[in-house]
Length: 315
Image: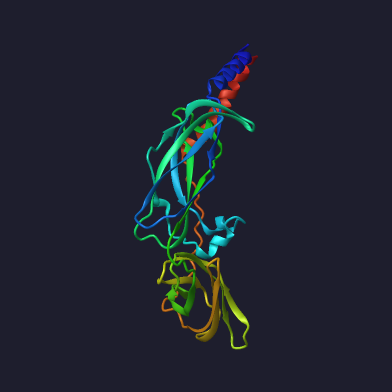
């Protein structure tokens, strides 16, 4: 009888738990191509957020800068050479945020829409906007209602991409000025690939394939990849550290900097010196042996006594 009571109690507890809810949000349209807007101007725009859920749903809206990878799609590949990677996420101002999706069912061929909301926002082009194309994604996210805890599941989210063109000559270009050693950090030498943005737009850049050669032209070290952001006219140091395995002296080096729509290559000579401070390898931590007191010996004894009492009671 006692086992039956325990089983019924456990099942009742499960029924009291809140049921998991899953939500999928849709947007329309998926892309808003604004065209050309001058610096200092603004435009009021809108899109729709939809869901098949019938539950009350509060949605928060967020913005994020769109990377150049988005323009690799066939419809936008021709824009890549005129694309600025300046962060434009702050150019969006939502008139209401968060929003509540209104219950107004719509029958469609590809499914029903039970709740939807028109989202109005303002696109503001600042005075310091770089020329060229800019893209920002707007993402609606359901807010977890109080009391749902981990039983609230978001199936998928969709985003609207805002594409705008700021007039002017958008030029993506740059050059490597030098490859130089930048001093030691402990036993690790820093090597800087010094890149200058000679264009008119911000670019995400990376130094890759940084090689150091011996007197025979064989690569001694091939260093890892370093990422950075370079604004127009700016000089950026892409530094990486490594532990030299050769003696002091001058060594040939080369590096390649990529900026998605192009790349720059340069050869140079770097000097490898001796570290001013030698760091010893840290000793491995000693194992911690727990100091068991007398009270820990009582636990097995208590368990044995409880078991004997249980056996006597069952007999």
